[in-house]
Image 1 (cartoon, rainbow, N blue to C red):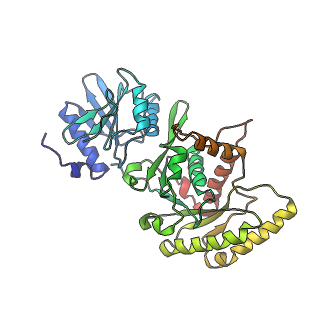
Image 2: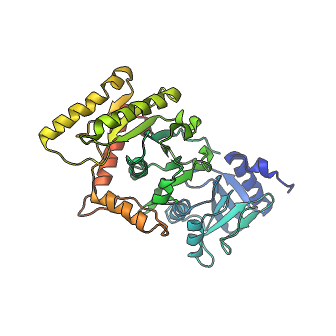
Image 3: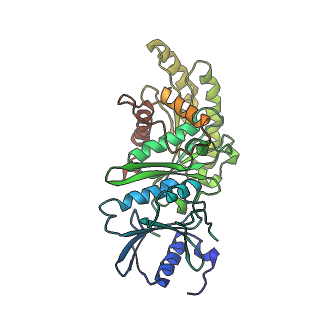
Length: 380
């Protein structure tokens, strides 16, 4: 086979998939392009029938991406294949390499890197380095405020979890220079399902993000930098929804009111169509009288914005809010105490059959759909 230009065959998903097809054909395989949800190619040779997932990425593969394909191979649809192949552009990250090492000899999934003239198989040496179907219309969320410390990273991660529980694959993009999102949930989260393929939350930093890298993710959630000018304008323009976390306490409402006005002003300079939602985070129960007083001040603070912007929504905290909870607190403490431990979890574990964070974030996702989604999140 004539040498391929590296710049050409890694240009985008379509070029890379075509390159992988040629590499398999060179080795005597018959190749069918199918572009299913869980695999892209079917390859046949002698008595072997294989499913191939082609992964065009700008950063190394991580464990949740591999785990999802492994689960597919164990489903009824996947068991007809006696071999799985996972081919990528950029090699395999630490969590993925650790998973590969646990498979031992003759694994059902072979992992490779697409090189100019061959596929470099790495199962025996996971540390080895690398020398389209129609895209889903993605829905973009930005979690943003012109102030740090209001919980935007926690909101971004757990809103992604809520959508994953409802059947969506989600891409999380870490735009904050502090990279707190990656510190909290590492490479991402995979939510398995019994007898089926689960959903994944994949984490990308700013440099690694590209729509082709997360082709099967319907939803993209950006954890934005509090310095507005540090957020890529081309991403801000794509936001369909923006979540603006704030607090609900007597001293903070007026102070944060100005911060939110500044946030809305900055967003509207770039994006005039997104729905903007002010969300109360870390909510603590109050008496009925206290609630009336706080709500009065809270809604008054944003009356001017609401009068001018019909897509600005100040969420009624008694309808939807993120409650202060020990689960969120201890989840954060666990992440801080064990920075060296790889983690792929959220504060969504049931305790006594209940989980406040999970309920709150599912309520938030449903509220957005009900108020502004117009069916966009469930158009299927």
